[in-house]
Amino acid sequence: MIRVSGKYLFLLLCPVLAGCSSYRVVVQGVEVDRMIASRPADPEEAERLAAFHNDLGVLLEGEGDLEGALEQYRIARKKDPGLVPAYVNAGNVRFKLGEPDRAERLYREALEIDPDNPRALNNLAWVMVTGNRDLEEAVALLERALAADPENRYRYLDSLGWARYRRGETEAARSILEEALELTPEEETYLRAETHYHLGLLLHETGESGPAAFHFEESLRLRPDPERERELEELADGD
Image 1 (cartoon, rainbow, N blue to C red):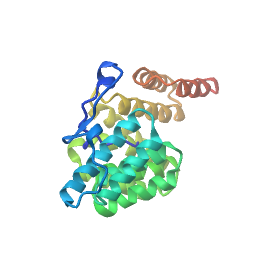
Image 2 (cartoon, helix red, strand yellow; image 1 turned 180 degrees about the horizontal axis):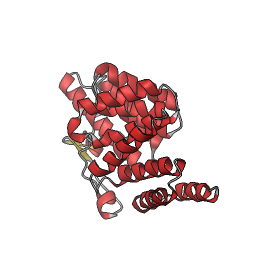
Image 3 (cartoon, rainbow, N blue to C red; image 1 turned 90 degrees about the vertical axis):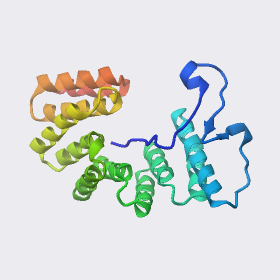
């Protein structure tokens, strides 16, 4: 599944942490209300401001301002065309907006810069998996992501498991999804919820309604979602 990199996010913000009405964002030493709009001549300064715009985009995306986030990611890429997170983050927003083709282009641009970037590999593969196309390439991309980031392999196992399931490899997919649940830290609630959901769908398809119901309940417990709850109720009613 698509995941947002927080590598470049260094924010001091008040409303998110304390619920207050105003805040000041400080990113790598730059304050929002003192940012200089002119493009600097110093390449290092350009890179620093590119990182700032990327981080501001992450903040706006988190607040639900997807168009604002896209604009910040665009500025970041313009200031530093080699800033891979700005491509990946923009791809994530395009995917959220229902524009998978534009998301795919951005992920591929990121991989042109850094061919072994695990987030770009994973997210590009997920576009293919959700579109149920190019599954061979998707599996290959995910295996590359696992090789590139073995210390955090849990981040890519859910995507790989679902890709293998879509490819008709039910037993292999089940094993991978079960491994994902074993390895994914408890605090990664979103990822654990998605893996429970996918494993539940697999088990429901194979006729194991009891275990499937358990995983569906866990998914909703970890990540309450009325739309998904309705989907699972309809699935149960169809049995």
